[in-house]
Image (tube, rainbow, N blue to C red; front, side):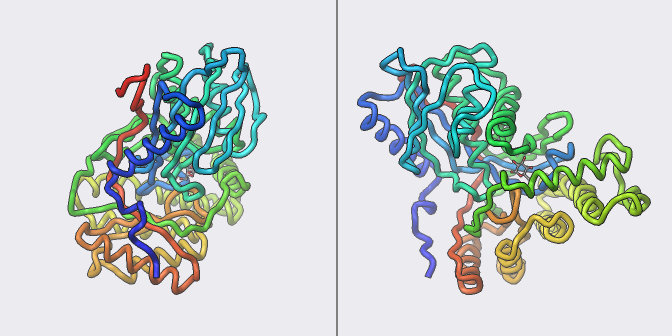
Length: 409
Ligand code: GLA
């Protein structure tokens, strides 16, 4: 029987405080002093608009009540030439060089941190030797942007340590660049934007071409966002993501158009002898998903939950069949939510994030959220033998300093 009573069920504010306490206590016991700066940055869930950010379309994410928190202080021994980061979850530490750096010297999670430190240094910012402890409540490998949360938390911590504030837009782009250049993942801008700009009660309709955000209020207490992790992990640096991105680019080139926003389904059909099957299928997903995202943003604003739900199911089907980034476990989870259906309080559901594993996102009537969660997890485990996990989240606050110059912010 799946345990629903683990800490994920604690109220979000308590979970946040617990994580903060854990990170600060760890800091105190490792380094024998209190941190001068504590920074937090959230993960995100994308409601719709998947694999669309790098295609210059629209996406509709929200920051979630799961955070990376980093406590830090300048090093007591200033002759040190490194920044030391300790991950309290993985119980390992990594030394990050703080001089000019153009590529990764670290491996694993250190690359994300190193890329952000390098971004600060290349902007002429004097990063001092420092010691830091990282803790996270964003599941890793779950498609909820744990890496963007780590990058943005690192950047926010560095702003506090150096007293050098970076414009939020530039901060998001600095972090995206860290991921490209240091982790080798050619991601779009959605994850870092969501982690920087998240606001309680708001979804973000992000125009990935102009990089402008249109706020879509989401304060309806009767409707909840349930996030269910298949617990099938997939590293997006593995190559399929870059391959999909290339297929989209080569299709657009063959269509001789500058942006996917100018492409209609009829253009794709007319070009079917110039595009190979993969390019055609990817193009079909991109064109239809851009339209679905705009429709969903409107439906969200109007409280048309059944319509939002239908658009989510269609998005999943398109990601499964045309874009081919789903997997059996994600498909099983979405099917289970469909079986629960509107009578059971489910409006709609889809895979979220890069895919090949990770999470689904489900829109449910709040009164039914616990029952839906229990049924999904039980049936998923019975069918696949894999134990999933699930939590609800409201739209959360983006990156912020909890403590600076030794005082609570
Ligand atoms: C990953 C990337 C994002 C986005 C999603 C798919 O999360 O980091 O930029 O492309 O996949 O929507």
